[in-house]
Length: 196
Image (cartoon, rainbow, N blue to C red; front, side, top):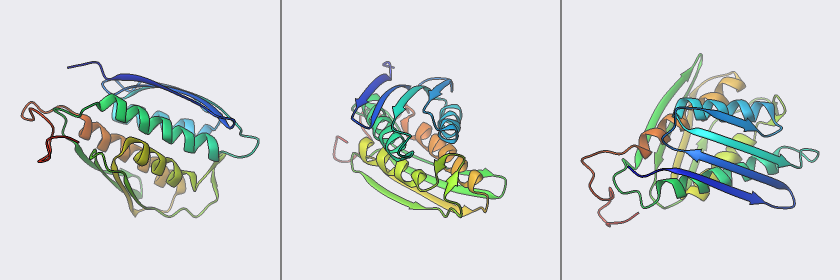
């Protein structure tokens, strides 16, 4: 199995981001974004997907959290795409139901090479900690398009905004872990087209 560790950097007038992702890690996360709740979400994603992540963001938080979180999604999606490479031997699809107390979220992924995003979750507050609640949607949108993946996230139950957001990140982690796993029965890519 080849090494699936990648580093992606992105620097704009709004953000300076560096991310190192190891798809075959053990859930070690070193995260500094300046947004406490977002750090908590990335840590949960790392731990429950068993991905090693080093993420540092220097963003224009004096404006708001938007640029930092959206650009982090772009960088993570780019890192995922680079890490899976030609996708030979991986399962391609992954899904997970993730319960967190009263919240239950479904996430389904297809590493198809075609970006598409569906999101159905309802937040009843504007912010969770210092993170704008609407940025949960925007983060996953950016990930799906940068990684060229189909990504569906659906809230099946839940009233606590923290739980809904956290179960979304953890469900995504479990689904992505499944989709990026190697299966010895898959000799090439899992597609009738011969490539993804």
